[in-house]
Image 1 (cartoon, rainbow, N blue to C red):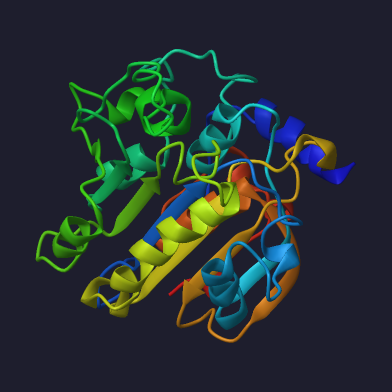
Image 2 (image 1 turned 30 degrees about the horizontal axis):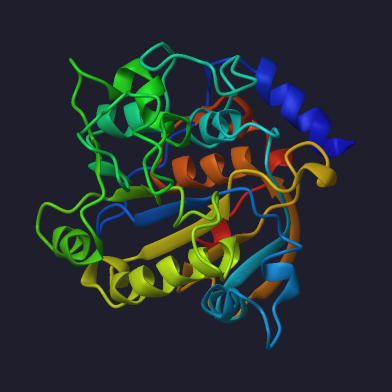
Length: 304
């Protein structure tokens, strides 16, 4: 199938950067982009079943008001890490499961690109104990941080002795204060913890209601911030879908921005490589690995 071919192509595309012409920074500065990565919930069970009894009404409302991709895919299943590496580096980096070691990937990723270009960025990890932590897990508590959901600590260009921009999530109030400050990052990534990202069942409402509760407690403040008002975009997606849907699975992906307003369901096909392509293009960065392949999709028209 096409998605399988794309996944294989992405895994062998290597870590090199394909030549493109970087776009200059806009006169008003770089766009503001926030990516939120949820876990293991396919499109059919989330935004594909938005109705009066849906467990994720807030996310459904965002999908209806802005843009909801109905034909977007993960790269690999059942493992998380390959998808996280694909969306940040344009390749699975040879990691076909979750066993790769941190601080081991020498190729450049999005974080390294942003740093080299002087574009401030921050990746927030909910329940991470210390910045750039590389422990596999933290205790048996299901709310804890796990390394496989934190792609940035696998790339050497994001780890000490280089600058560490991977930090514990401080909560929405503190984060929005940072976003509205003069030292705000232009690019932000959030990985919620194992309860809030829908990986584990932590309440009687189930995984989707947990995701929705976290989104509804977080995004209103972000969307009303001056940071978002200044050419802001929020992308919400999932690493991979249920195991029965094929390689990577069809995943929900919502784009929230002024340019995405009113689009509703969008049938354009794509995958995690296409998300990376769109972010790199927005910042005028060269396209890494499989992000350079237009067949992997492009969200550029919806950003900003």
